[in-house]
Every structure is written in structure tokens, then in C-alpha cells.
Amino acid sequence: MLPTTTTTRSSKRWAFDTDSAPSDYDFQDLTGEKAATVDENEEDASIRDALKRELLLLSSVTNRGEYCSKDEQNILVDLVAQLEALNPTASPARNCQGEWDLCLSSTQFFRSSPFFQSLRVAVNDKALINNGFDLHDRASTPSRVGRVRQTIDDNNLLTSSVDLQVGFPLLPLRVEGTVVTTATMKVVSDDLAELQIVKTQVRGSNIPFLNEYLEDPRLDMPMGDLYQRLNGKVPVVPMKTYYVDEGMRIARDIDDNFFVFTRA
Image (cartoon, rainbow, N blue to C red; front, side, top):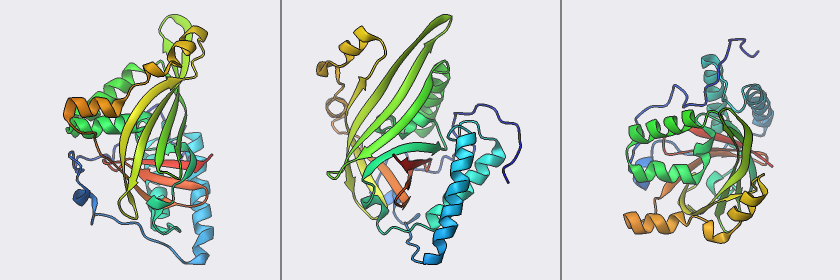
């Protein structure tokens, strides 16, 4: 039974977020801590289905976790952990192909994008970047994050699409658009892939002249090249996957924030 605790908007990081994760990513730092398991017990299929139903119900009434109470956060954390322990797919990181919609996040929705995950790795200071993300979240309060999608093709190219509605105080105007980020994806173990950003672009504005302007390929931001020029390397972003089935995927970032996707 779902708790009836009063909730408030809380798009910031959930309270369980800790400072234990490494800031400077190294593959060896993430091995040995946790590994994907494969549940081969056919009788557990009904348990997985029940867990997914409860997770999807709670995510829908809390707007993908944005309006969670503390009790609801704890329930969702437990549901995710139970699903990861009952993962039915061998080598989940190698079986993520398809189109996916974000249905639950334990942190700001925009942090599922390789654009922001690359910033997290590049800055190499977890406290500083978290403060920066929180400031960005507060500054964009009049805005709304709509659909968040990820597409992973057979060539291991990940495309992230984030639909945004940007509002302006005291003005009856909203600018809509989709921020599209492309990254290469290299699977390095059964549960770990490494992402490297290629480019970011804005598409689909509701303002005709702005849309025509943004569609110009010359305005695409070649983020990979920019990182290469400024830092001499493109940040390597770890993406951990401990659960995937025919309809759901659970990914975790370098700080162990989780993002639950359902197949589109």
C-alpha cells in the first residue's frame, strides 16, 4: 500500500546520495564493488512483474520520482535493488539496444544525458559539480522537463533526447525544444559501458524562425572536439547496468544515481 505522506516538489538529488563515489573515473574503481547477477529461476518472473508494477505505479504518481516523500524514496530504492538482484539477462550492459523512455530517476532528470554526465567527469569535483547542477535546477524552475529518451543502436551509439519547455517570468511565452546529445558507447564488462560524448544539438523548437535557425548543422556543438581541444581528451563516462529485460532497463551513473527506463 502506498504511503499517504504529503509530498513537495523535489527534483534535487535524493537524500541517500553520498560522497563515496570516485570523482576521477577509473575502470578499476568500479569493479569489485557490485556485479550484475543473473536470476535463472523461472518462478521469480511473477515476483519481477509485481515489483515492476509497484515501481511504475509509484513513479507515475510522483512524476518520475520528482515529488517523492522520504518514505516513497525508500520504497523506490528498495524496489530498484530487488529488481537488480533478480536481473534475468546475462551481460545486461551488452543487451541495451532499443528505444527507451525515462520513467524514474533518483536525481535531476537532465543528469541522465551524456552531456551532463560528461561535465560531472570533466570537472572532477563531485561537491562542486553537484552544487552547479543544483543551481542549474533552481535557475530553470520556470521550465519543465518533458519526455526523456535514450536510443541505443546496434553500433553502440547512444542518442539522448530531452524535451524542454522554457518559461519566462512575467511573460506568457514558453519556448519548446529537444536537446539531443550523441555519444559513443563501449561495453567493457557484463555490467559496465563507457560513454564518450560526440555532439549536442537543439531540435524541434515551437518558434518557427528559431527552429529554422537551430536546424542549421553548423550550430551543432561538437562537444567531443571541444573537450579534446581544451583538456586533451574526451571524458570517459561510466554507465552501469545491473538490470535489463524485454521492457525495462535500470542504469546507474558514476555517483550511483539510478535511472529507470521503459521500452518505448
